[in-house]
Length: 251
Image (tube, rainbow, N blue to C red; front, side, top):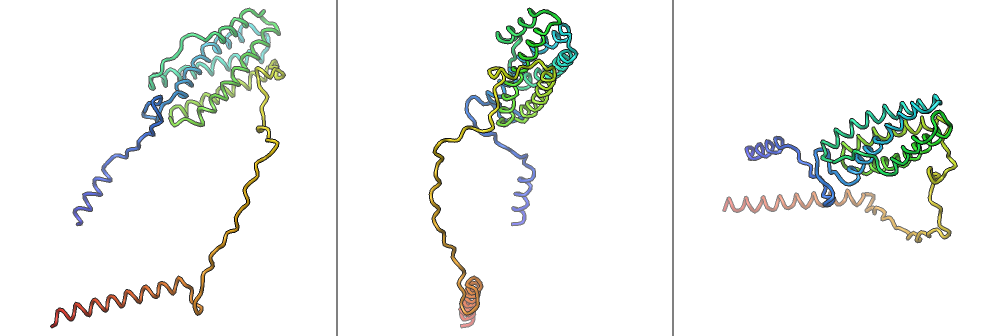
């Protein structure tokens, strides 16, 4: 018996822990960091796209603006996306996610607006600050959603770095003083909560619950009395079976 127990312990302690990844459907693939799904792949693609236009936009901010605050925002964009681009390429290679190499049509259109705006003009600063701030706001909400729901630890850590970078960029863009917050289409107004319905649901009436009180018998709680009865029965059985075995052994 001892040999069997020792063998079981050796097998249990020597076996590597196996944590099965949840089966989340055909769109998810298992990786060393956890299941990789559409949101994680979309995150890598979107951050790569952001770098393809925000890096050049940051360089235009340095070259075309006369505002020191716009130039500072441009430096943050260049440095932030240089770091994110490196992280994005490495993680995409590890997780086998193809990345875009050209900005999309909207992003190219924003770059064209900045290129066409006169250098060192308020028009350039306005286009620079508003296009970039609106884009960063949308990306930040997307990052938060992926960070909240992903089961992949590498994507979770990557999303956190992206959120920190995007928040820094939003902060320096807002500091330029050129962001138009009255444009609620580009920067939607935040809602504290969804509007309450006119007829709130009524909770069903609670049924009174009766709590059983412990009954006492002669000052002795039922629980203790029950234990005593069980002990007495066990003693009787022991004595009875012991007496029968004794009678058999001595005819």
